[in-house]
Image (cartoon, rainbow, N blue to C red; front, side, top):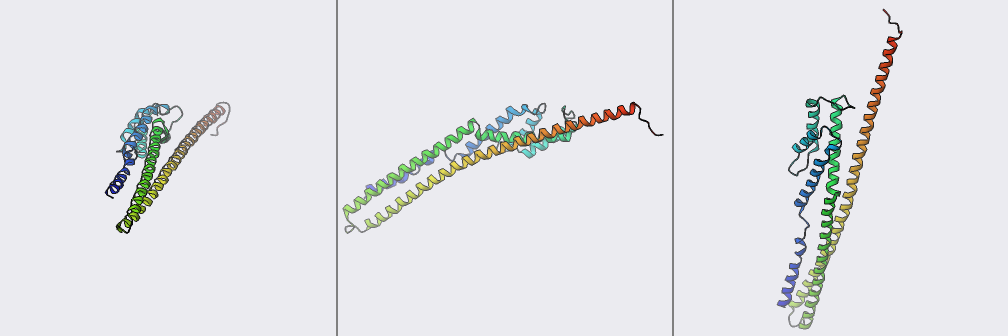
Length: 258
């Protein structure tokens, strides 16, 4: 009987094995995610923000909080102030600094969206997610082994009780019932662990789709901004043409009333 109890306690100790896996280290994983995000911002701002990549990077750095993630509102405000008050030279397509500041602000927001996608679906992000899924499946496998061991222990305990006979020691009957309840509880917890792991998998898929949606929205906003810029350029060109035509009419014979 004492040997059986010791085996039961040993089995309960096995239930702590999955806790030693990589699951649950959320702060370490989040730090890796934020590092990927910052690396993307550090090495990609020069693509479309020239010659403002330096001021944009400074704004992102100053707006970075305790989670190592930039606050888009604070970064946008600083870039807007820098362009309007300190950078009086517009680019070749814009002569309005307010419009220019909005364009750069929107571009920074798109970079933040892309950096989040990079942190989640980039190479290192996928390695982290693969490790998490593998550790989850390993934990489920260990739980299933522990559940099978519980069945063996319960079967051995039942054999001992049948051999001893309840007439010799009526307390053995209660021990058998308690063991049955524990085994059923372990089986239920095993199935719950499988359900939780499946929920994690579904969450990963949903997060992947969400990142693609964010990326599509960023691309759509960029296309709309480029279309608006082209429209403004065409409007300015048309206004210049009409002004030139009007000036030529004044020079070649239009009478002015005194």
